[in-house]
Length: 160
Image (cartoon, rainbow, N blue to C red; front, side):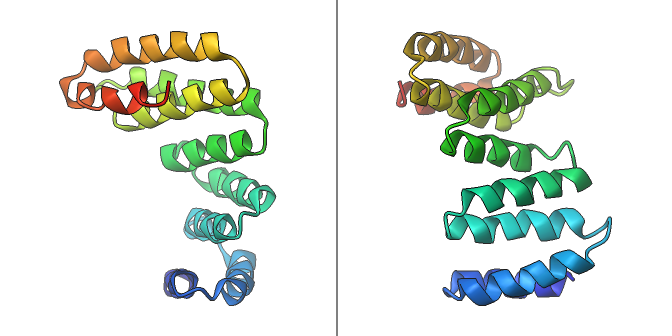
């Protein structure tokens, strides 16, 4: 299964998207608990290359059935629903990621930066500029607490 998926990603890289989708859909029919996340997550990447956001969302939701806490897949789900204009739903995804990152015993990972950034972008797209500015200040305050993340504050300042 893993070889097939990687082969299909290679086809995607060389521009054979149609063939890649067809074989990945076939792989998805055969996946199990061990391969389900890998198959559907990578299928979402292929659909993203075609800008089929509905299918990206569907594949990410399916991937998350296999690995519900996967932060990158969850973040990408928030991004795709934001791109589809469902800003409140996207903001909820980002809020959940932010809260989980802030609650980590070892401190947050770089996922915190990405979640704040895309939440602020979603707020801006929704026309909620005041909330976006407030969220930026909250994010900057939070990131300053961890030196390994404080160096990334410029990424947030560039978007507002």
